[in-house]
Image (cartoon, rainbow, N blue to C red; front, side, top):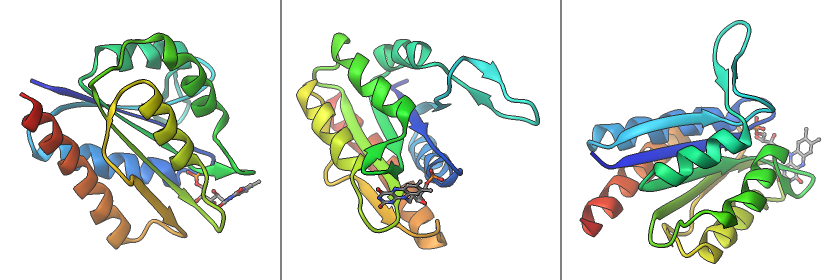
Length: 160
Ligand SMILES: Cc1cc2nc3c(=O)[nH]c(=O)nc-3n(C[C@H](O)[C@H](O)[C@H](O)COP(=O)(O)O)c2cc1C
């Protein structure tokens, strides 16, 4: 079964809400998926949840057939762990894998474009324009996120 890694960084949880929907959409189309919240180290978070270090996320990225990377924009940059992932992922062979980017912003979006540019540089087949949303994660945005997950599954099935 083809595998999608949904990897994201967040400050206050909005990006995670999108990641869960992308995951649901991809699984509904038959993909095996893994959702990864980036953090300093790989550990269970007190009170629930789990973070994954950038290095461990890179290994998961390496073994996946498709990768969706999500980040909100802070001071015109991606979340710091996502920036670190983008810096290091160039050492992997991601050529021809399916890529997608997503993330929320307030008024000045930046992170999704940075992720897409990085993915293109690695030779990934990027689903454009990605999903960049402003404001609260509404039911409409959740549906669009779910549809992005479905699109990733379709892009993968067209390759096989
Ligand atoms: C300190 C700070 C800096 C921010 N910088 C930007 C920015 O440069 N551009 C933008 O569009 N939104 C900016 N935002 C808004 C966040 O991107 C937005 O609240 C987003 O939904 C947060 O998603 P998250 O919970 O996944 O981190 C900023 C928010 C904070 C608190």
